[in-house]
Image 1 (cartoon, rainbow, N blue to C red):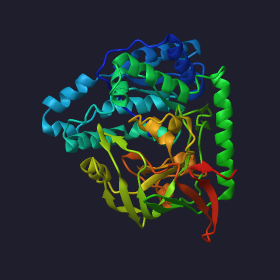
Image 2 (cartoon, rainbow, N blue to C red):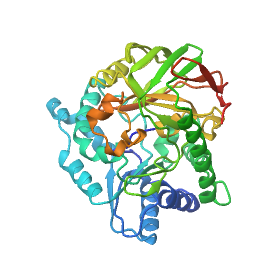
Image 3 (cartoon, helix red, strand yellow):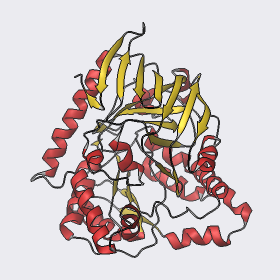
Length: 425
């Protein structure tokens, strides 16, 4: 499950997109993703190039009875100006006042929407250590606002808008208009907007994911065993863990879909009970770089060895963020037949790429994925095996060649996935 994003930038100006697509995505954002309530305020971040969608969302929100919609708009050229011209010591600084204000808005009941669409390689040419430095500072400053997200205190959601810069990364050999059209069609399909009644389709999809979670929660597995090319990994599960996926009810009582699209069911691993080796099945786009052919070896829950054919320096910086960055905060199961997987695309965007394959995430766990999670302190979550970190980075380990078993406390195995597809429940 991708963590909530606090900033969004894109270098391009707003693009011409079909109004039907913008209206469809806006309707999903307000009524399926957020389930925005009458009188509820909304804090929304968006890249400049996604402004048409942000405007459509704003109109849909007010039609649904929203209180005040507050947009925060990011711009790539301003972001790049910092890396080109700012003093080196400034990268340890982040706008804590902004995130404190967001936290206050969430405490007052505001919902949160992140619109994605930024160029995933925006920072590819910048110093990796400086990018990591800025991200550490930003993550630390963002913690007060992020607590409302990771604790699922409010209804929140993330969805994407097709933009020229992003489309050019996915389809570098196509003309700009053709690339944008291809990305728009992919987003329309994975968001289930190509159905006669998208809201009804999402209700049915959420019911299927809920049934899968109910099966896994009833089984009370002690661990999962992943096997595939280059992978033999046992992931112990946290004590009192809960499987979640699709729509869920936030602590404010509002049922929402945090991610559009979503194909996963997920839960927290035990931070000290991960053993074995694992190989990535897809590249990871992270901090403006692509990390390819990741391999890790875990012992006692820690990634004691980590390699990558490309982007190894970025991977090392990520794992060195803090003490919890080299441990797992999430494990998720996704069928190989998911619409995102079947598109055959690498989106360079975790919101999409994580929904193409089963995956694990380095870093922070989600408090909502524990029994009575909203009542547990940080120390109580840690005592149950939940991991804590400034980061939450998902990377894909599933494929059409992967198998997954659920293990009980005695080690007895129950097949869950074969060849990347569900076989149980």
